[in-house]
Length: 53
View (spheres, rainbow, N blue to C red):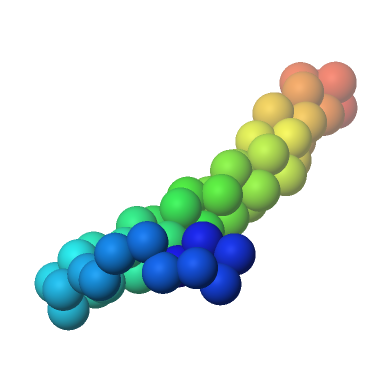
């Protein structure tokens, strides 16, 4: 449906595929959001260890 208007009917397999793509996209974004702080702390800790020596 598009704005309440029926475009075409889809099969159960197509519906499951669309839902799977939606979940993959959501989880892919979370990977980016977790990577940024992890990279910051990993590189910052490495730099601080070098300063302490």
